[in-house]
Amino acid sequence: MSTTTNTKKEPLQPEWPMNVMVFKPSDDIDYIKKKIAPTQDPIKKFKFRNGQEMMETHTSEHHFTTKHYALLFTPGEYKNCHFEIGYYTQMIGLGKTVSGHGAVNFTGEKSGPYVTALDKDMPPTEGGTIAYEGSGQCLDVFWRSAENFTSEKTQWAVSQAAPLRR
Image (cartoon, rainbow, N blue to C red; front, top):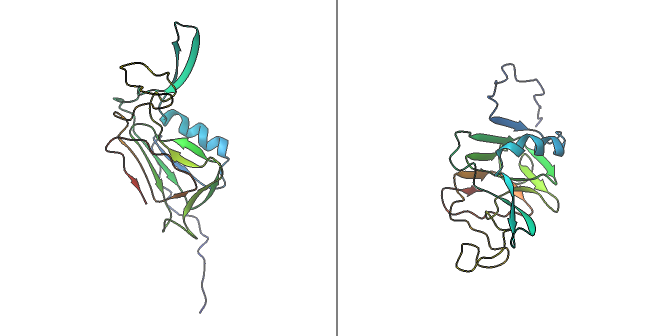
């Protein structure tokens, strides 16, 4: 039995709109992260402890935006490609299977898509939404998804309408 591999280029390459991004394993990881950056929840600086200290944390400013994104990853290995899935963003691995040959694999210490709790880096407030150090909130972390990939480490802190599919 012999097998042949079709190495021809697709004759009718689709013209994707700017909000659809297609990545290949040969793309530089910094390039991928730079392209994805506008889709992530913004990071904002806040003053606390009577304005004496500054702190950064993800915010929900993209919550009611009209910007929607699709992040498409072709099969292969993406080493140390760590990125946040923001509001109205869908990440899809384009492999035929979720693991093994022909799959999308995120590898490395920090790898693959993640969703953090919003305001998780803010200091605790008595009677407030941040109950203890590093707790954050997930009550309004939704409208995002990721599917068809493997990752060595995945953090998915969401409340609703945010599927993580195998």
